[in-house]
Image (cartoon, rainbow, N blue to C red):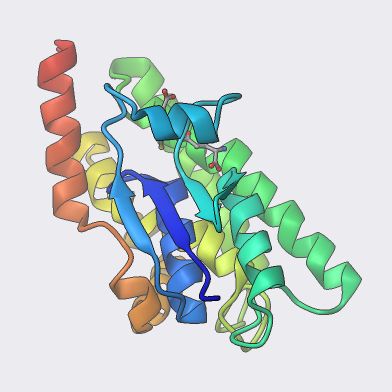
Length: 219
Ligand code: GS8
């Protein structure tokens, strides 16, 4: 019997995009369902009753939640094609460490650039640039984070690229001037169809944020 794969997602989500890239890397066909996060579907509430968040991967009726856990799951289930995590346990631990760093530090810094303003936004910008520089150090001279192959850690980070334009415009700074090697890496990742087809359009992400600001009445 063919696998039934459904993804509950939201277009501009850095977390949802990770799952889209992983599924594309593996060449898995799936049904994409866009969630309205202001009016969540009964299916989302049933499939992720703990966090009530997207993304949720529903594989043959069974839900898997949390983006990094989902990417890991995809790698383990569809292991014949495009391995995402390294086979060496130490390398795997490193990949998980840095993915955790991205979730804890980069996401937090972005939330300070938007919807924050003034001093908090300035602090967010500083933090964001510092985090990018740490990541750039970890990338070093390698083409991808784990070496020669695109994989788990690249997936964990590349989805933030869709938000870079919004961060730069809202925070009035230039990411490439601060972290040129990281932008070269991002462009390398974007040459892959699995990435370019799965990522949200940076201009749309920015427009979405402006619309959300209007709705929330952010000055
Ligand atoms: C984060 C998911 C998340 O924040 C993961 O999957 O990695 N750690 C999780 N999802 C957001 C949308 S993206 O900003 C979400 O579903 N929010 C709905 C809500 O908070 O009600």
